[in-house]
Image 1 (cartoon, one colour):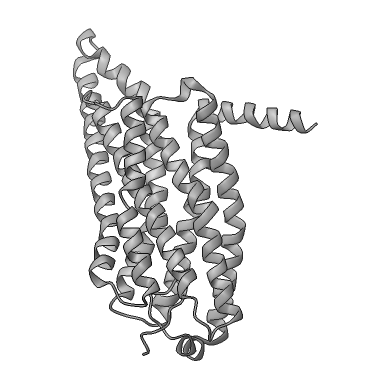
Image 2: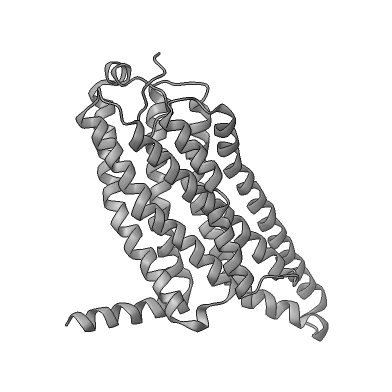
Length: 311
């Protein structure tokens, strides 16, 4: 296998002629279908996450630490829909139109965008999970100003790895160490998020046991109030975390497998896993609207104002 060519969602350094010969028209059909699906998801992600960001920005009462972190997550999804998905579609179409030509540059850009936004998303999701745990445990140290600083820092943190990966892709040289670090980071952060949420549910269970054992006595009324007040937000972030699992775990697994094994099943699984990852950027804002009444109301007002101006 020649180590001088590359293809979109495939691991780098594959030869196009071999891909076309081995996988044939079925592979091209799946690539085209994936590109069409992603091209539809892209504007949905941009519009939906743009509305969420505008709602949080316009309403000062929504600027609390939890919603600032949520805005950071919406910003990564906006970047995915605005940059990563169009680059992915462009790369797929270039390959389909010119299967014997090199798409090293577009592949490098897709790889860089996906690395930047996926890692930023994973970092923010982890911080959101830890924030809920600390909040339920009454040990939260995050205020609005610190939440802003955290979001900005988490956007800057993946930049060195992103730049290094892009430069190495442009040089058409393998980067096993960086690939392993990058592919291992998201599963690690998912593990941290899972542990944080296990602690959250331990706190919830302990509160319930206290309530049952003490019959809602005055000494334990405050934990009960806290549980009732924050139960919905805890489960809202849990649902967002589940969507993140569904979107990013398949990508992490398939890309890790591709470093040691390449066959038709692995190649196709990578294409489908990218589709699920891009889908999560459109599903997240729908979850916000479903689970968070204040954001839902603000978005409704925003849409009414936009429609009123147009009329």
